[in-house]
Image (tube, rainbow, N blue to C red; front, side):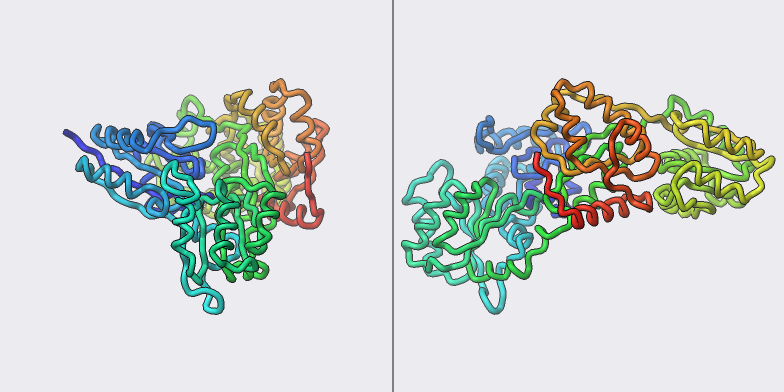
Length: 520
């Protein structure tokens, strides 16, 4: 029988950036992924398109598999010869039942590997600015569960767990405490723990929703009651909690807790996500643009074959650069064959993409518009010069027409096309209903037009109009801002330099200076 292999993988806590390289590689190559509700679902975006995804977590109000059923399914997939990944939140061997699943594999002689993950027991306090050990406060750590085995949630079971730390003087970390939070705190005090002992309760740790409550063992219950304690959460008990006042860093990030709706195509989302996530915001993806290949590359291939006849190549987007260079390589050409041809890009983002292919642009206008390209080229005699313009099939006529008026021979080649993506009306309606968006980002005029068409088709009353009025609008450039203005929408944030980095920096400055606190 052809047997596959099972990988018991720790996905780390809520922040998807905290997954290990080895764990990420297992996700990318898996045939089947069994995942639970504690993992960040964005990690599943890295799975192969043909990978089978099986939800196997435990969540209130949602049907879930029993542990024995999960074990049987994992074994079944492995016996079918499939690379099977069991993706678990945190670390699989710290209250993750990873040991039980591995024991089941051993009994059936199924090959396996363990890929450890960053446990929430370590990561969440770190994101709250609480070191678990410190030479002046604690030299040891105890990690305990907030409830008993399986369905055993009896007082005696919890009492037995708390007995294990009765005389422990180091830092105590309690995982899964929500259901028994009152019993835990009262039980510790009954055992003799000082009611003045510092305590932190951290909810949704390492995510933009992180919320940290601090107090003493005697008073923390009243604080959690007022704030509404929710899962997932952990409790940290000990003198190290007092260090949070000076070491808190994550919740002070410039865009912490801000929900940012991004309308860019999927090809640009990774870069935008990286910058926004580092600034502390939650990114909600709603691509209003789909970049699709043209039906045939015959036109661009023909011009590549005779590339030496051109004096200039003008790139107006990163997509144009990527497709041109891929076709250039596919035709067996070498970048040295571009020697003598001058290159212009519409902006720094496009120039940066060109540098990825070890090519520097000769002309990058200060303003990232077609008009700026024309202004830059006016200093050059273009009469009789041959210009190749590889760009979107949807590109406007202003640029080539003005170049022709300057005496240039222009060859326009469609390398890709911009389309409105297919979308689920119910999902968009749910997005508006469940999220309070702080900012909406538009990186092109096409995104503006398609987004407004998408939301206008949704039968959700004036919900989307309310968002556009109350959320802050960010446009990456003057052309996009002008398009918004044409629809009666004011641009609140626009960077002087039209790059993702500068855009996010401008957002940080705006929210800091305005002290915006949007309530919807």
